[in-house]
Length: 187
Length: 183
Image (cartoon, rainbow over all chains, first blue to last red; front, side, top):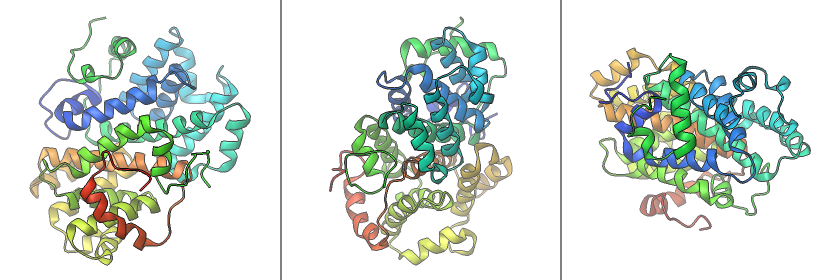
């Protein structure tokens, strides 16, 4: 049960957003720009970054929600998503994404943990300034979303089969206000 | 020097905000809704104080000075009081409710799961509403983002604290929306 009375049945961050639409709007707008921008990093890469930092922050709701989104964009390759969560260095992903995921681990600890050599390695592997910028901000933003969800004890579905239909809904419609107003899709 | 070429010499978060206006927009809208909107039973000063305290715990020099100066401006106190709160809220004359909310903010800074029902119950017993608890958690979480954005890209920060104190009245008057990043 959440720490506060949210007066709705939405799971995870959706319930908190419905409780406070004034802050939900910029939170959703930020996710839309960061996770669905088609320039530079792909949507799959963006969702994998979100999944990894949420996993490091031990946020069950977020790493499963965004893991399923990544899965949608990766044609259902759930094993790859799981490997990025737990052991990205050996996952079948580009060297660029590996280097960016190293930056993600640093940002998760603290902004100051990011070292010039981490940036240099990402750049050598082909990362642009925009890729690095977006990686840092996605990782930082999930340090917000994860704390928001768990800090208020948001309702977290443990039935993993409920995450995929929601993920398909977001993949189709984006991170608009429907995420805290539309009911749980059946399939 | 910042880790990436921001194409400007602006201090702190204004550098990456000018570099990436698409993300600056929701970041500023969030700050406005959380810190400045007057439809809130927590004062602007109290909300800026939560942002300051979390930025201090995250060791983000730029953010703790920007928001500490704003808190000082709204609370009409001097910086030594803000510094005393950062060092140990329990030993200041802050209300017990604010002390309880800062305790929740400190837990959020460590991790969402660090917040305990005991902390929440205590804040509520001291008069905190659900919305105040919600906003405290979200402000603390938001600064865990802003701080990481500022330091994760290694932006530069003016070291003279007077710089921040001098700018606070203008930010208080103009707000976080539609201000000129270059001024």
